[in-house]
Length: 637
Image (cartoon, rainbow, N blue to C red; front, side):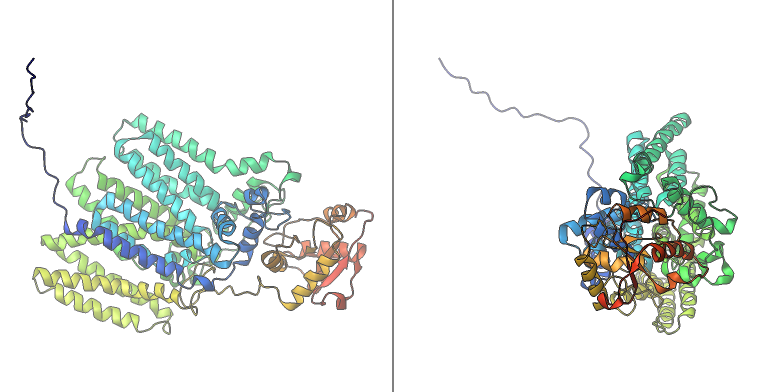
């Protein structure tokens, strides 16, 4: 039987050919290498000198203790025995504790997570701005954020703001995706990220909610009621995740967890709402009376600004804060105001992508600007990291908008050069308060700016391009010099307080190292511990920190962070002694003096109980810097 061979059939396609992908622009072709360069620069600024990191004594003590047990990790116990917590939620220290478990307890191991989180912030901001305003704007925003001093300071510190800013950026990214297609699931993810940020900085995390909510309400392509419903669900997720730690702490019996610092009643509400929120707005007449906070009000603090500016919007323009985060105010204003005016003239629909981005970053900036203007930042300039994100995003968009106007010609072509000139003048003005700190940078920026603006007047495309680039370099010169100063140990030390520049604070080893006298005291207490849970009760966390950091010693710190917390009470101290869990109490000579002041009442009460119920140890036996008392079982006080 003859076999039949089927010949291959050729399908004939009908219809128009598939559309070709649009050719990539020059910016898109160079995007990846440029972004890698920016990320590498950020990593260099954050990681340089990591091996010379110092401990932040308060937080390092907590990290050391948190590596000892799951309970200490969960609650953020300050001491290894789990007697008292930090004065805030511990979520921002969880990555540091994990790093210490992975690499060992070293100063650099505590700074490393912050540096990684800082680089992640730069990359994530690029992604969010790229989707909103295009590749050039995304690259510009990433570069601006990298060269903002507060970003460098936060990336080299052990404070809360690196993970906090990263989590808020993740929330912004999720909101951006949710808004584009009215996706409720992605909006729920944004709510989760805000709740996670709450574990880092508590109610400050909720300050981002107006930006996220207004963006979704304005721009999501869904009916009004559906948008409101989606936001209600996301809000429920935010509340559930935010309050999870507080709920666990509240439901856990007080005897089964550490005492919550900052409170009079050992309550999570008192710590979060009273101590860490209401007391920050004392300048507005708000106090924390009745909330369980150990502090009901505190004096307004300009946060590094000139005292006469007080708590007002002018504080954000003061050299103390603006030199850390506000170099790009004029360019950011161009991005926000110029962008909104252009969109209004075009009569774009409410679902327009560019409109959504301007709403997001505009409301973000306005909200945090107001919060920090009227809330006390107590000199902690690293709080401004969340403001730097919005400024960088808007400045990146503003530069691109202005450049397009320059290329198009017409009446708006002068806008970008004019704003650049104003921005350089603003940067130079900020340096007037620090004439000895790289004083050459302001004149150099002025010369660069004039040269760049002169080139833009040549009316040739290459000259205009080169002139604009030179003028932008002039804008970045001064903040770049400030940021690069972090590479010098003279101006910044990894592990510090997040400030970069001439007034940066060096932490040193005074509160973390065991001096010979401390070694001798530790040896004596260890030898005479007699099975007690605590080596000794000490008068403050500053006295406890060296023993916790260097030796993981189970000392009992009194007074909490402020020294005002009534923990332990004299009666509680008596119970510890009677049960054999405590043998020694360490006092400062000043504790025996009846002097008014913060923390003196608590220290004085413990000192009086100790003098009455315990016997002094001869100073020659342990070194004698402090007063050591040995306490034995006896009647309670």
